[in-house]
Image (tube, rainbow, N blue to C red; front, side, top):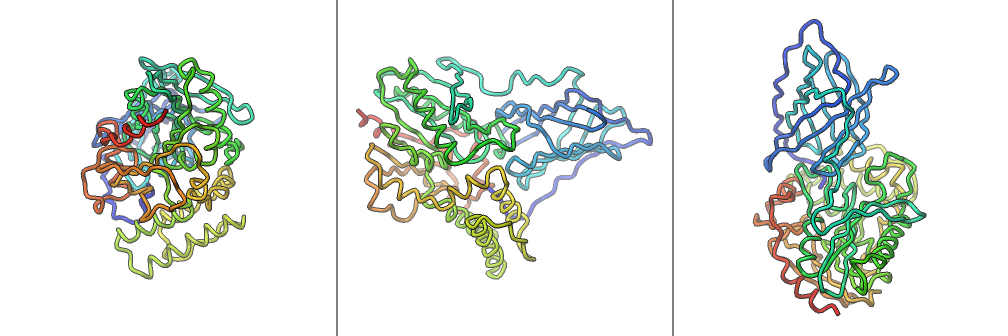
Length: 444
């Protein structure tokens, strides 16, 4: 999901004329919307002036992003700028302020995409974001429970039916919340919630929860492998106490990186459903993903070798706990950004602990019933050419399914991280999960 080398068509920005006398933006609540192919994506901005410095927080209700503290909020020369470098794709905005200080028109960019955005002042009231974040639907209720070392985790319980199992769902990598919404996906996307609904249709209730760093602004928060694995154990413990799970066994449902982490704590569950599991260690997967993107971009052999050599040196410095090496001439900006993301101090320990974690070594130890599910159009974590004989569980291949188990009808050869993402939204239906439903019927 990190587009690296591709041509970008920059969209022209129609800036409002700036008069000689320009007022600064009014502090308070601002609203705007990005026009995406899938529809409108609302953005809410809380803009404040404190002790002479501008501060801001961004809320994206459809993605579950609430009060995300912005960095680099600047007002100068009739322009408003802000960024959120901690989010994948390095989202940022730069726009011209209208003379009355109540409209800012410019460009919102993220992960190589550039979209026009107009923000309008909506009043003095502070941002409440009442519509942001998960809302309990019919048959659901919101819960909070202690995770690793007592850290509070927020979750959603969905009641099931007569199936003898109850699911604990573990989301994938990055800032992916309990519904599998991610700021990098440029449209409303709640595939995890869709999977929970699908499980309920099979008679299985579920607990899905936000990872500990979702919504946190604490750079010192423990997000180590021990902490995140501990949170899964805590979620399983919580699930066994729920009235919705009374008398039921626990099915651990991990997606992508969540599947890898589920393998780490497999002995705490009664069965495992591993969706879009990485078919190799994270280090090898990162290299394979980048090599595929360089090849798809038509990079010459020498350019590819330079970029891959640098990325391999970055992974090696992570293993040896050494400083990030300087990028030589010719390394793509996207790979430099990826290297910086992998070596952020707050997550470096987790990256190091999982970089060479082999999923097949963990899978060989499984004594619980298990199934690994891959979509044949998944360009993020695809099925390897061969599955090791040491794994004794079931492997299920889903035709016309992407990384989020959504329906994908385009040929796999036409897909890359950027194009595949256009089918990740809520408007794309789920793929045919009948093989998974048949396996679930075998669980007793």
